[in-house]
Image 1 (cartoon, rainbow, N blue to C red):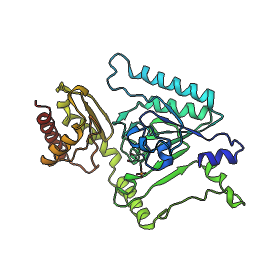
Image 2: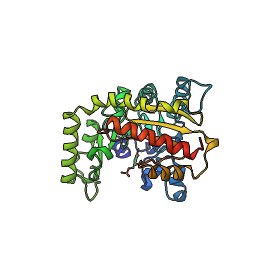
Image 3: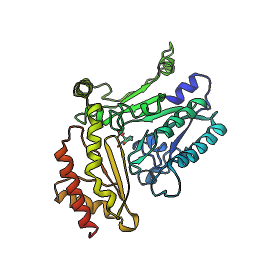
Image 4: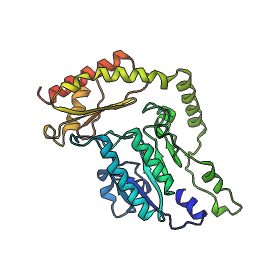
Length: 316
Ligand SMILES: Cc1ncc(COP(=O)(O)O)c(C=O)c1O
């Protein structure tokens, strides 16, 4: 849609895309073409398109550099790419604030703001993939709100129906939407899927929005976020663990590389399972991303069980 828009605006060369290092946007050939997650992509390397990948700010394990200086270096690289290639760039795609599958890599609000401003300045569309972070997950209803600027495209799914039925949404700006109204059918945006706008899924989505609003979950989560942070205080004093971090209703930490092997995630999953918790590490990143209805007791139950499972695994 981004490329189609540029084409309709007389800029047919704007057909390349940029994504961030370690990014994950899905498993179709198109989505893989704008992802950098090698474990998902590698077997299909002869099929997907090769686009630009630029550095993501990953503050983990960077004890000598401030987060601000890491942001600066990444933004400089992005600006250089935009300066040199903006005539051929259609869009840059980002999972705003938290890159999930990358290992819950968390970015600063300022990075996001500067990222969006640069893209707007060089006329490269911003595609905000809020499939995992939308609907209040990072503290705001949309993670993009932290940039105080809107993306050109915003993708939603997962929490939109609270997982009860599959539904996804693509939102765009009025000028882009309007551009597809044309007397010639070929100029319209003709794509959809079998279950697009499925009435039952849409009805659930409306109910989810109504309940989030009615029960003031975005406001309540501010307090739940603090309860979660306090419940995981033990992580700070465990010398096998590092990089404790949190954005809204996502908390994550890493187990030091040298203490894990490639079976770590599986082993912790099974130990957690025996302890009545569901834990699904991404490599050596352990994260907690609970439903908003979780109670204080359930948070401390989970935290304690995770602690004992980890201690058992790490022989502590
Ligand atoms: C950030 C992000 N984008 C895209 C996707 C893929 O979504 P779908 O499976 O609906 O294609 C996921 C799935 O986990 C995701 O986390």
